[in-house]
Image (tube, rainbow, N blue to C red; front, side, top):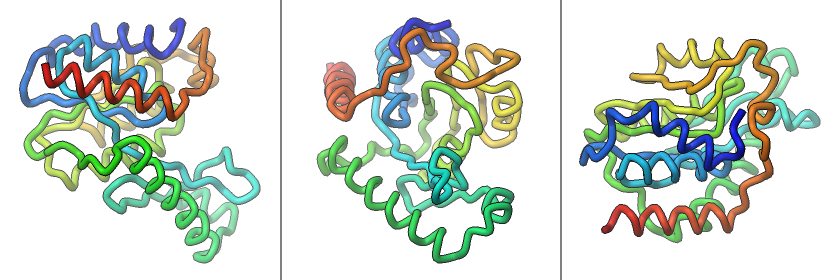
Length: 215
């Protein structure tokens, strides 16, 4: 059990000490919940910190159920099984993708303030979220990041469903799930405080992370 996302980040950082102080490493967090976790990891390791934006695509009328996800770089990942089982039409897919693309663009402006992504070519990217359940969001992020030709992508989370953590070992170069509880239940079940991370907190932690990296 983690006290909150900051505590989870500090515990996760202990499993990533091999990457500390390396000038080829960058931590990228998935907003919003992954940002406090990623901030603590980057601070502990003494490496640069930034965000990478991904949005889930929810089934109309069952928005909590993702039929896919989109990420920076124009990547869209679909779960064909869910698309078929809910008989989603191309128009359904286009409508939800359009709405989430607009939100993705808004968050890019909100968090990055026109600041471009750092150069990721040849980097070792530690990609962080507050947990892995189905993994659809993280999967989209990994696919999108491959386009930037990093040296490797390390998926790192404080808690993950054992099956999902195992699946990612064929998609990422390294996977670190600090705990893989069985039964898993849900990501929030392993946090004492799992309250929502605000846009303001994301901006503040990003600013602090950038300031730390420049010193």
